[in-house]
Structure formats: C-alpha cells, structure tokens
Image: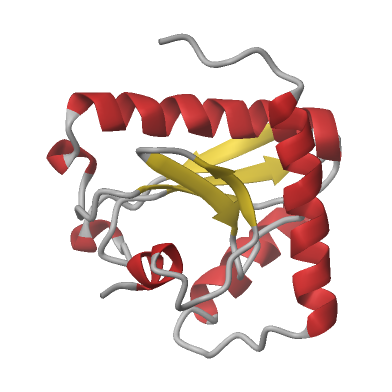
Length: 155
C-alpha cells in the first residue's frame, strides 16, 4: 500500500480539508508554503490517463475549489497546481495527486526555498510534532470552513 492508501485506511494521520466519494484533500506534511494541500483520488492509479473521466473531473473541480478556499481563508493571491504525472515526471508516490500550493505576495524566494526543501526531504522521515500537527489542523479547519461557505461545484 502506498502512503495515500494508508491514510485512507486510517493507518496514518492526515489533516483533512475535504473527504468526498471519489477524491479527498488534505494538508501536505511537507508544505512548500502555508496551506499547501494535496488533492488525491481514492482510486489508486499512477497517472491522470488511468483515471476514469468522472474521477478526473472531480479531482480538478476539487483542486479549483481548494485554491479558492486558500484565497478566501488564508489570503493567498495565487496558486501553483503541480502534478508529477508518473515516475518519469519525478512522481514520488505512485498515486495520482495534485499539489495546490498557495502563493502570497512577495514570496518568490520563500517559494523557491520551499520547493527545494520539499524535494530534498522526501526521503527523510517527518516528525509529526504536536505543534506542527496543530498548525496543519488549524489550516485544514479554515479551508473546510471556506469550502462550506462556497456554492457547490457544478455537476
């Protein structure tokens, strides 16, 4: 089982922003910036091309909604949508996922540093301290509140 499947099974802790039938969103444990969210289909496939059309649509709808929630709840000005679509694209977890990384004004150097730190620490264990988890849970709660106040996604 990959790390996402272990999260779905309740074996690993996650700070959930959204839990839907086809896709979930939760805080990245190695955030590139404050509010970094992973949007992940429950279907365990490696690439976007392997997803059925309905799940792929749900994945992107949720990613766009999370981005709007980041702007509303966290004050981000823009987002990066990052997908490493397969092993050849440096995908580290063999399961499709979209990184929704909020960007804040004047944060170019911090964003580059966050990206480099994220990439270089992927192989290292991440200690899940109480303070770090509390911050992730607080951000997730703020994003859940923003999502709840938004109109539902179009079918």
